[in-house]
Length: 462
Image 1 (cartoon, helix red, strand yellow):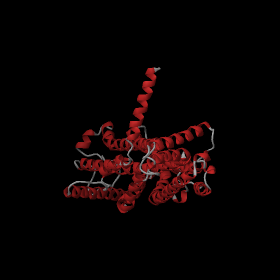
Image 2 (image 1 turned 90 degrees about the vertical axis):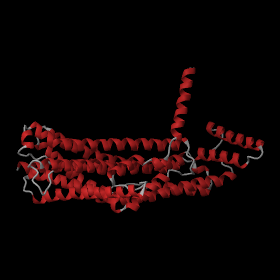
Image 3 (image 1 turned 120 degrees about the vertical axis):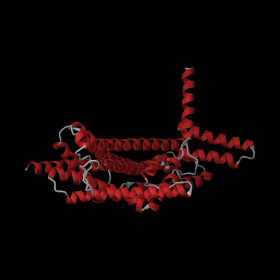
Image 4 (image 1 turned 45 degrees about the horizontal axis):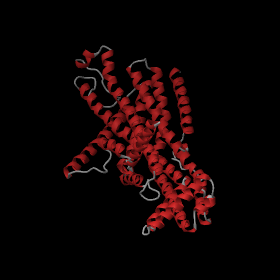
């Protein structure tokens, strides 16, 4: 028993130390670090003027690399004469590039807005001052853990798909017995079909073309698209966690106000020690009786406490207004991206499935399979966390009702009723004509993809 008590005490101390380490200003450090490596993020780049100059040059190099990627792909799709299967593969790459370009636009053309979103997100985890209680720290810590886990999972899936894509051409050359022709007579080692000013089947141009596409694919696939998608997902996750913080603050309003009353009593009456002890004893007695159900919650708030209660609820209302404004700003950035995501999702999954049906089980088949898994995983993540945002914002009116507002003053009652009325309309990410980003929408898109795949298969057979 003594050992168990010591172990519980150690666990509580360890949990307290972990909670004390919560720093909302560092919630985006992992995601912004990936974007900086990708050359698409400029905030917090510190150093000498020469270092900043080199990073700007690197940023321009990345943008030109992305543009060259798109131009070669589109030219091939326009100029090449291909059958249905080959054209579907070329069209798949073009559609993916349109989607990727859409996701790069905000960080290139709307830099001030993106910077404002990140700064506001980091600085607005505080509802009632800078002192966070343990429950608020736990919510933030949980959100940070989820955000980092999703970032690594998604970034890892993109890196895996990219590596498989890079290794596919040389693996096909090795397994088909054409290694000698690769170095002598030439063999097409292109990772994706693209128009090039040189013949990519002639040695050594095929080797040069392959390694140039390796650099393009790895840079764009992992650090630009992987980093950006993870970044957008994390913005949704932390916005959802802020609604959870507000729900916690409202649901525990009685307890939190009681703690604040106790602290203020100690501070305001700190001169005579006996008065301090008396005030503390009275407050503790109220909490004890409240927990036992001996007295009503209304008795816990005296006339002197009404101002503090009103201030507490007003801070919740102000924070709610901030969250609604931040959600609108987030919609301004993400709504066009989600529209393109959903517009192209069914087409991408349909064409990937069509390629899988036509291919024999080789390394090319495995490449398409990993691409399909990544596409479904990406769409599922956005829809899942979109649903979480709707659910958590809807929960606000329940949390406000559980705050004990019916025992408060008439002014406070009206303030809480305002929160309840506004929270009945959930906050959601819009996707244009597709509706709200949610799991039911994900199910509809998967059904549509299967329908398009069936039609394309019938076209091929006919």
